[in-house]
Length: 188
Length: 188
DNA sequence: ACCTGAACACCGTTCAAGT
DNA sequence: ACCTGAACACCGTTCAAGT
Image (cartoon, rainbow over all chains, first blue to last red; front, side):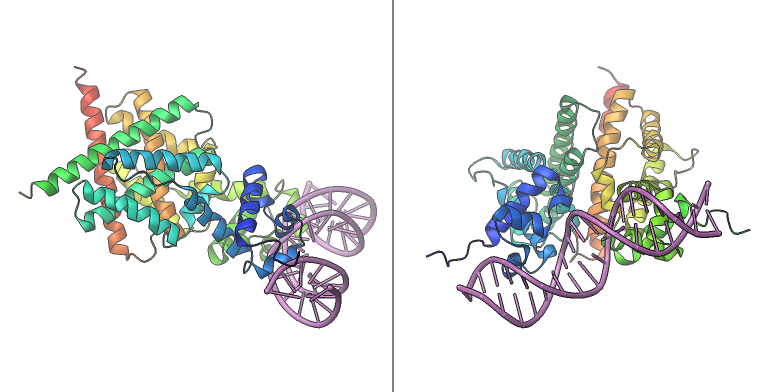
């Protein structure tokens, strides 16, 4: 007994995320992660390729945390729920969140989220191409807002003002979608 | 002769930005910057506080590069020009650009840009409070898009598609502004 | 006033060695 | 199979010393 692995990729990612949340991205060193797991830094290299790989996995873990809304909700409520869920993740992991804007949206978890959004938009009445474009813009807007909020770009404004900003953004998106679906429903 | 300072904050920032552009943010080390200036790393500490201060200045330099559009253009053309200018900066400095979303928009250069946008929005017919809110949302959307583009989130889509995405975003913003100004012009 | 040499604590990563 | 010790090249930063 006791010769089974003491660490694995999941525990390494969890330790890294915890450190990032508590002390910032710069505090995520191989040594700090190993310390938290009661192991030497060198032990990590059996489970992750290197530090870049480790950070990729941490970012991916953020998306895994994102709950997809129940499929029986109407599409617009699904999108609103998703928006709030993204903001919640950003507030929970403000130091890691900005990395989401800095890597290709082609990982398994980002596909999973994208597919859910595209499905909602198709249900809203957009055709496939329009839905994919709308998804790119929608995710850019929401990620940009959440990253700004988490990164402190809005520091100096209290939470109420920021919530109103976000409500304004939702309204803007809702009216754009209404316009887009009306156009595709009555192809004049 | 020769006892005048060989380096100053401006040359340090320029060297750092050049390294970041050529080899990425991680390559911006005190040693690399010093090398490029023909000096030892320790010499930098007389001109900048530390590495965090150096990076703050580099980000600020990005905003300094942003040309504010001529004041005789109509407000909507000014905003469009600004949007393209932001995208140009993001493409020129893809590694540094994402940092703009990660720090408070309270520096002198970010004020300068914000004031220009707010002025355009007031000219468009928004009152002061609405203009400030619209500016926050507008900058978030544009920075988010440009950061996504620069960071490679859209990798896999060719430039034409991305340009069309941006055009779509401009249209969305234009129609939202039209709606907002109409509402404030006819206070029913 | 400005730059350097020497030194310190800390990085990421490798590789052979232990169990 | 999994972890460690030792080693390497490289970080950021300080401080006293040189000119």
